[in-house]
Image: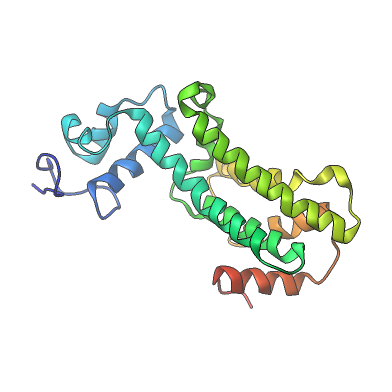
Length: 219
């Protein structure tokens, strides 16, 4: 048996990826929430998937809602921080929006489970998840700020400012349909986000900017 510094000893060796029991719980919950649904997943089922007692799970999360909150925070916090940084940086808007789309879409593509789909759960419409909904709306607002800048610079259609955010959401739908993303998909989506805003500049340049800004191997 194994302990993780908190709670009771584990029933068996870890069966989930993660350096801590908390990370293993989140991995198991992500799989169950995305495959069975939130309402159909109990904390006992999550504990069984990890290989721990249900009582031990409560040393890490007091409720199932707390687990969902932790999972969803991980899908939006990094993108929100990146968007704030890009909005504060000088220079043309197109490269900055491109970098945000690549970074956000890459995160949605690379996560082990399709966590973005959890935002579609009907349970998120209730009041206790309002903060999560507001944070996602804040991310959407920052997307639109960058998009408006691109439209202004390129003379694009003024009513298209919400389209880049919607394009990134297509990653969620694509993963739900076939379970994966091609490595190039975040870059294709980012290129498409600029095109729908009327931008027709040097795509090699903006791709190199995104690669350098996000420290990704591309150029």
